[in-house]
Structures are given as C-alpha cells and as structure tokens.
Amino acid sequence: MPDWITHLGLGWLILEALHRKEHRLHFLVGCILPDVEKVYVVAGFLASPRLEVLVQAFFEPTHTPLGALLLSVVSTVIFSLGEEENDFSRAVGWIFSGAMLHLALDSFILVETSGGIKLLWPFSSKGFGISLIPLGDWRPAAIVAPACLATALLKRRWNRAGS
Amino acid sequence: MKKRNAIRLSCLATMLILCIYSAQGAKQSDIEYVHQPMWFVLSVPGAAYLLLSLVRSDELAIGRKGRCRTG
Image (tube, rainbow over all chains, first blue to last red; front, side, top):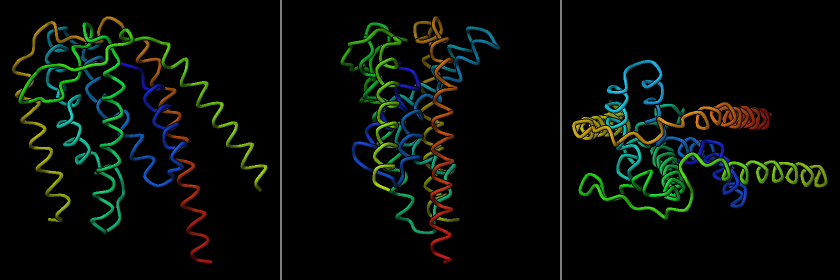
C-alpha cells in the first residue's frame, strides 16, 4: 500500500490539473477512505495478533470496489450537505472516485505481497494488480511530495502575478 | 426519515454483513502491513496536515462567498 502522502498528494495533483475546486474535499477523503481498515495496525499494537488478523479480515471489503461504493455512501454523513438530493449523489460520486484512485494506486504493489485488488469480490476472491512497487516503498512519496510542493509554489507565483 | 438517511443506513447494513462474511474467512496469511507499519504511521501526520489546511482554505473561501452574498 502506498502511504497517505502519495494517495492524497496524487489526488490533489489530479484536482489541480483538472482545475476542480468543488467537491475536492470529498475526493481527497475518498483517496484515503479505503484505509479505514488500518485500525488493525492499532489492534496489533494494543491487542493480540489473533485479534489483528480478525480485524483486518473484517475490514478487508473496504479495498474492493463494492465496499468502496458502500463506504462512500455511508461516509457522506461526515459532510454537511445541502437539502438538494443532487448534492448527495455528487458527494457520493466524488468520494467514490477518490476511493477508486486509491485502489488503482494500491494495484501497483507487488501482487505477491499484497494479494492484489479483489475487483470482483464477493463473487470472486481473485486479486488483480499491476505489480510494480514493493509494499511500503518510500519512493512514490519521494516523487509525489516534491511535485505537490512545486505545484503549490508555482500556483502561488501565478496567483500573485495575476493579482 | 429522509431518503438519503435510508440509503446510508441500508449501505451501512450491507457493509456490515459483507465485513462479517469476510471476517469468517480470517487466516494468518491475510496480514499485509503488520511487519512494516512505521512508514504508514509516519505518513499520517503529513496527510492530516494537508487535509486540515484544505478544510481551512475551503472555510475561508466559503466565508468570502458569504460576505459577497450579504454584501
């Protein structure tokens, strides 16, 4: 799994490239939403390894497209949405897009270590992946973080030049 | 009950059923990140800072919009 800096940084760079201002928080929350399963790390620190295995298996559906969709709908509760039903469906759409970006990035991890993304779960447990980077690799963050910084600095300079 | 709350509740119920179904098949080899959680843990403060600064800038933008509307 790439770290959260990579997930959020790449999501932010995509939003900047698309010049999207609306719903960017929904999208960015979606970018890290499937990692709610990481409470198993806390369970591992605080409790027994057996509980950790159980907690991880319990939250495993969060890393599947179906689980991400259900979680996107549920997580809209943390946002204050207007009265219009349009707001709700748009928020779900943006959170789900972020979650799918998360799954796409996770698919770059070596399948031997991650087991791949279970695209067809619960109908099939077969894992799919592009399998390029080792688990816990620091290099994606080392590329994305300076790119974010450079983009933010350039944006600031353009804004100053424009005003 | 609002339609959107009903949708949220039904999704939450479905998610819980799927999670319980998944937990029934728990086995030791499912552990993915337990042997190297440090890099993940280290990335959390950076990510939290990015999100919080975005929330703050959004709130400022909303505040500016509000002032424009009221005049």
